[in-house]
Image 1 (tube, rainbow, N blue to C red):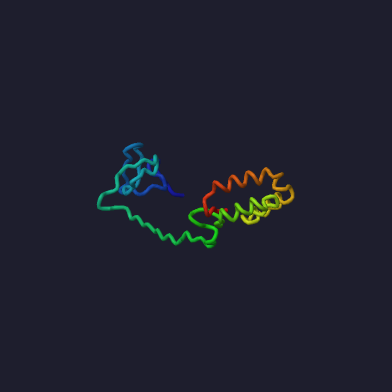
Image 2 (image 1 turned 90 degrees about the vertical axis):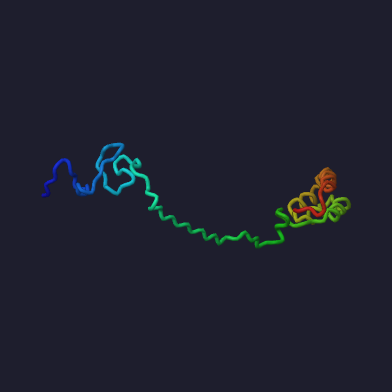
Length: 138
């Protein structure tokens, strides 16, 4: 069995390679910058020993849209002609032709079975189409 005295625990370095912490007074290794006991900084990094910082910025991602037809001018969707949709809404709005033209099949079926939402939906859509730019994106 090893014999250690009370001042030198088994895990400490030899006495000639120790120094005292400025904050807690504990014995720490001579080359320590941060106290191993209290965790506070006891020395500043010397100017001639600048830290070795390695930055690996290799960004290989590219923001390429694989479906080019769906992204025009930052808007998702396909361009539709305002005047085609307006004519379809005026003449065939009760059966939802303008909704089918826009690619909104569910709404087209709803218009088909409800008579253009009892014709109120057709009037609202016609007014909304008048205010849209040409082309508009759906």
